[in-house]
Amino acid sequence: MNGGGGFGGGGGGFGGGMNMDDIFSQFGDIFGGHFGGGGGGQQRQQLRGSNLRVRIKLNLEEMVNGTQKTIKVKKMKLAEGATSKTCSTCNGSGVQVKVMNTMFGQMQTQTHCGTCQGIGKVADKIPAGANSQGLIKEDEEVTINIPAGAREGIQLNVRGKGNDAPFGGTPGDLLVVVEEEVDATIKREGDNLHQELYVSFAEAALGTHKEIPTVGGKVKIKVDPGTQSGKILRLSKKGLPSIDSYGTGDMFVHINVWTPTHLSKEQKEFFEKQLENGEMMAEPSGKEKTFFEKVRDLFD
Image (cartoon, rainbow, N blue to C red; front, side, top):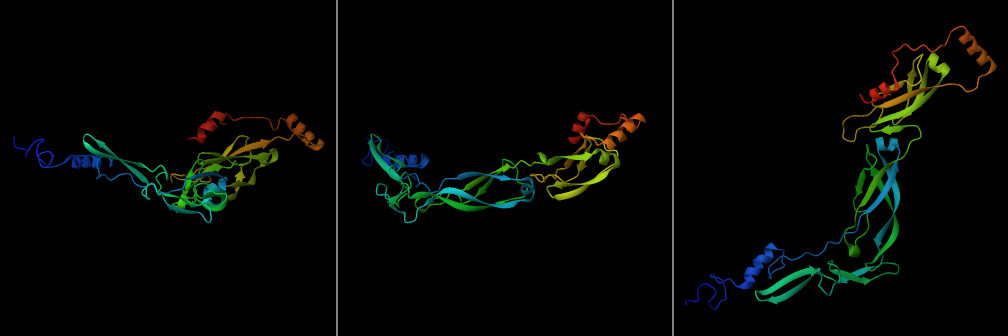
């Protein structure tokens, strides 16, 4: 038979003269260089430090307006005097190549170098106190810019302020998780804020003006004459700006009329006289809103 086709012939190939190594080199291109001699192979592992995560507390004013915080972070840093050298096992490639002879020809596999863990470098000089990669734990001050509108649970990424990489690679990042500091006076509900305001019986009866704190500073509000305990005043756009830029929340002021627990002799006689004359009696008009109606109004 003519040896120019099929499996015969001096070239030992398929039809057009392609040999086994050529065939498996094509498979190597498909499977990432695990077959044959022509694949791309595994790349040297990139040197990058690990990320650090910290928590930072913000009050309501800082969350609304943004702020700048300087904190102390304990991180892994490259020790002074630490040096490295090329890994002798992989000659700096970060991979080890193994060649096996099979019935189909030679097959080549690549794995991360077991000596340098795929880095391509190993420690040369390690200063006292440093680990095997020349890293040592030290404190570092980091300044963090908090944007306006930050919220509980938001994570900020400060690039390059995490742990150093061994042998002079790229540092990791510092991940800053925001926590809300509980305010003694103002309570947050989404973008809306709530606070209680106590007024005396006389102030509620006669009306008054009161100064209250908000996240934008103190404001003066009017308490109308005859204000009842439980009335809610709504201050438009005195809440928090929406994190999704959908506007600004409101401030709700809950009025509580304080009833004195002790009266002087003159005060007691005054109120007794009013009761005798039928004055200052509870006379609801029927138009007062119930507690549940007030709660419903808050969400309308």
